[in-house]
Image (cartoon, rainbow over all chains, first blue to last red; front, side):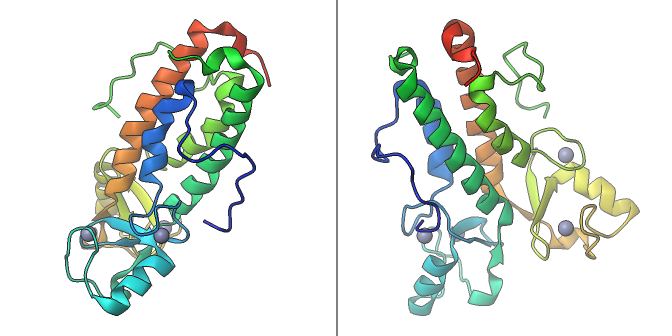
Length: 112
Length: 112
Ligand SMILES: [Zn+2]
Ligand SMILES: [Zn+2]
Ligand SMILES: [Zn+2]
Ligand SMILES: [Zn+2]
């Protein structure tokens, strides 16, 4: 998501072992189309799947269905899932602070 | 939320300083009616507020509006916000593992 600059040079894929439990949370905050964090998360109310606003609108202009479960969707069905946007912001910030903590205190970067 | 047993004896309020960045994420995963983690999260599509299914249904039986923003709501408007349920499960599990890690490696429980 371009709007949230990643302050840390660590690649997305490399989670310190001590923070690995958070990886599942991270996965749930990502769009199934672009795989980045949700950027203006839109929920499809009939199936509960979520995508970035731009990603799903582009997709629907080609095919009027949910990319995951194929339920019929029109653009007017989409509703903002604001809590996901707030979770992306808070989680991304927490993740950066915790990564920094692991870098600063190497003892906790050893496997559990 | 009765369905997710808390394995740790630590009271909800006491976050170790090193894990404090996650408190904002925790707050976002709680229902504004019962203040516990969402239990079957339902979104009100017209305002994007979320509550536990039981909490909001009980509320709507008294007053047909959103408890937070007062927009008119009927029970048939409610849609499951499944990603929030999955986030509660993953986050609660991660939180317990990280709390345990802090207990086991006291060095990281000191303030940042
Ligand atoms: Zn996307
Ligand atoms: Zn779907
Ligand atoms: Zn509730
Ligand atoms: Zn509302």
